[in-house]
Image (cartoon, rainbow over all chains, first blue to last red; front, top):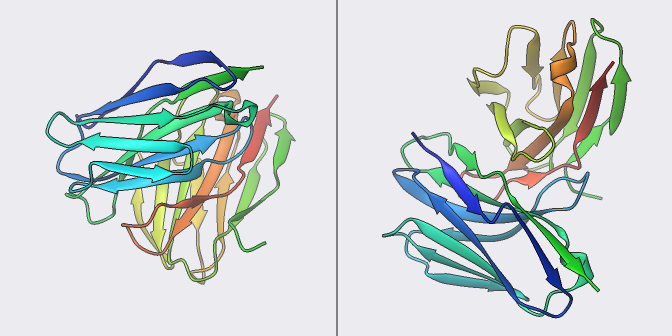
Length: 114
Length: 113
């Protein structure tokens, strides 16, 4: 069964600190992996997209890594800001489906305290 | 604003009533998705269009749910005989190709009382 598991479920950090969010998936055959940021009550916004051959990709203070062998990804946030408080969702798509089916994790709820 | 637009943003309805949500995707995007999201959960796939063709429907999309994209541009999602379990945020997303990250709208919140 194709699944996406994220950890931790929630995380609280102090402003200025770094943190790392984890995503494990069983989706096969793998096509790509995306990280989205979703503010409360808003739609998800794409942060990064990574294909099988990419190990790391950065977007400002966000750095995503991908290990396609172990089927793990991480999202590292550097020098956190209050505005980083949101849910971070890992999304994996499979290559077997011509429709590009997306499999969503439940998200990690990040809270940044001043 | 050239992003994905959804209307209405919020809807409160009585159980048993019908509701319709509209999604206007980014103009050049031929793929359009509908998702449902409840609190603390990731979005769940409902249905998918390529142009005007509805190519896939989730088992979550019971016969009370119907989606259309008549001209391959905007899409509507109708829920008939709403139930309290239908209360959720309904998200629309669009993309140009499967390799692209879908762009999501702000969602339409439905509360069934």
